[in-house]
Amino acid sequence: MNDLINPTVGDTFDEIGESSLKVRNVGTLDQERLNHYLDAICEFRGVLSEKIQLMKVVSGQLERLTLIEGELDKKATQVVSSILHISKGILTGFKNELEVIEGSKIEKLCPEKVSGFRDEVELLEESIDDTEMIFFELRTDPEFIELDKVISGF
Image: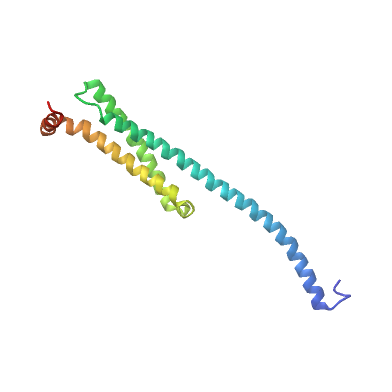
């Protein structure tokens, strides 16, 4: 085509024609990558939602334990100790995941979900600490036991 028309016009036509073909191919690849990227973000958000729910369940169950009144026998105390051990393992896993998340750039893409995850990790840690304190510190503290009796009206 260059031979029949002005060389600049012909070269421009050829170059733009080639670029047009390349743009279509690049555009398709970019759309696929973008879809994959967005799918991964949606999946990440879903996983965080599930983990947040799991932490809420564990925290709720630990809170439920703290409402038990009176002394526990040795076996029940051992079971509470096991529950706390398992809960601490769960917490350690979530804390490790939070470190990975904070070391990445994902938080900028879904800040509210990461913030919710972080908050729930903190709440779980508090629940574990509270439960441990109630069962293994306060219930063996004579001053606390006496104060509890006064407050309870006994």
